[in-house]
Image 1: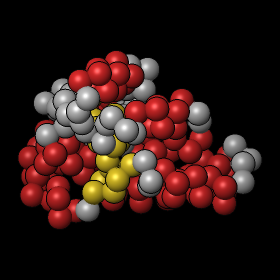
Image 2: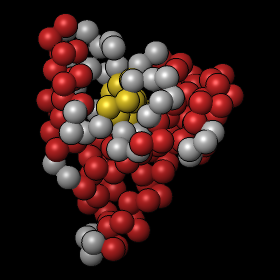
Image 3: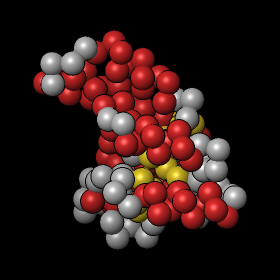
Image 4: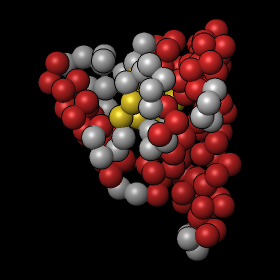
Length: 145
């Protein structure tokens, strides 16, 4: 299992690398993201797309499609880890606590491009290295760390 940050969801919409990895490994790895990551992606994408002079509706439709590959995790699942997550990420970007809390609640790693998670006590993967984790997990034939 792997928790995706909002920036990975956004990359899944804007590029091909993340989407390809999600599709290639969906049978072997459970991809999840807290509901707040989907909300952040929905809020950020229109501004990003306008700057790039790209149409908004197809990208928003792609984000909806990503919801078939990435399961949204409701607050009830991760909320009890809020204090611990805030403590671990407080010197960085405390607004990212739901990502860390989800990883703590589900006992799994994080996929992000955000260095704020480094050193928080949870394995953190960036897109340029995450395939090492995904391939190893697929080889083991399970959805775990």
